[in-house]
Length: 97
Image (cartoon, rainbow, N blue to C red):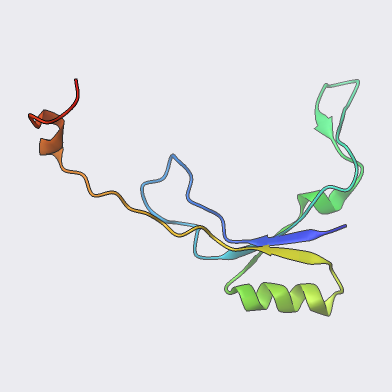
């Protein structure tokens, strides 16, 4: 079972960058999920898919994975490209209508 180490991106519902400063270590699910026949919930046989560890730095997450012999892959975060906008741009003469 392989783990992935990544820095989560901000959700579309956030205006700030809360919960994006930390690095996460998550296990990939080894076997397929199934639908439980009684309640119809989605389940899995492996409980490691529920683990989600949080670290302050990428190096700490890598050190943890290497200490416990966990195969891992690191996903580097994409750089942010902020777009400067002004309210007046909504009423600009050059705006395409």
